[in-house]
Image 1 (spheres, rainbow, N blue to C red):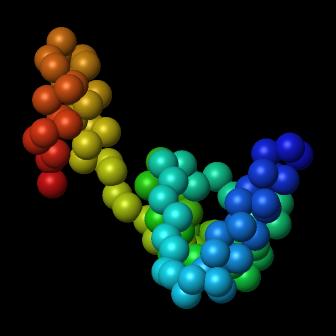
Image 2: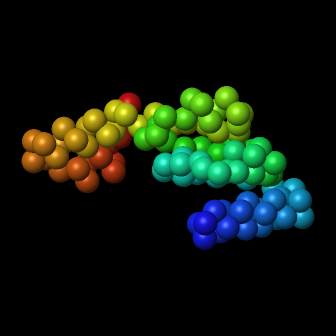
Length: 99
């Protein structure tokens, strides 16, 4: 409940900044866990887009919120798992992202 209140305040503040400054906002999040009224708040917010990774399936949420954009990180996760399993450096991925 407290977390949802913080998100609501965050969205309202960004909306106010957008209206005052006419800025474009994009929200980036590693995991797009949208609960409660999150989708309606995003739809009504001044965000141009909310960009999340595909660590959680988003297809159903995307049907109700056209602002949600998903970045596929399966290749980098697979490479990180492979490197960990083989005892190789994971920090290598910071400068060599698999495509």
